[in-house]
Image 1 (cartoon, helix red, strand yellow):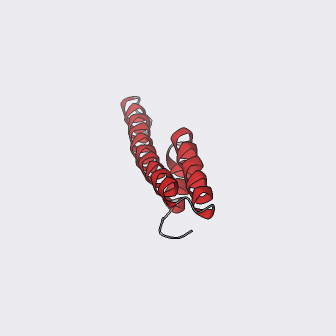
Image 2 (tube, one colour):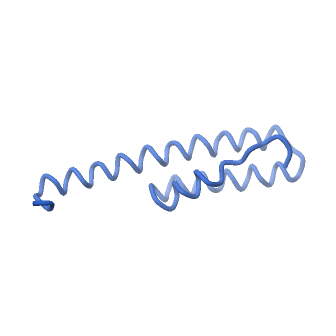
Amino acid sequence: MIGVRVPWIPCLIGAALFFLPTGAVALVYCWLAMRAGESGDVETAARRARAARIWAWVTFILGILAYSVIIGALLLLGAFS
């Protein structure tokens, strides 16, 4: 694929460690960007790679929020004392 960087690593890390539902969406957009790049459609590949990056950021933010809520709830319940 020429000229389009597909963010596979952040999408995989986000899906595996942070928040699977939006991480899976990011991975699908990575795959679609890769297929569009292989077929020579650079404009579509760039657009889908950008969507994958956005979904990867959404995954990281939601994952951090979810972990924060879980740890906060555990702290309030006295699980660490």
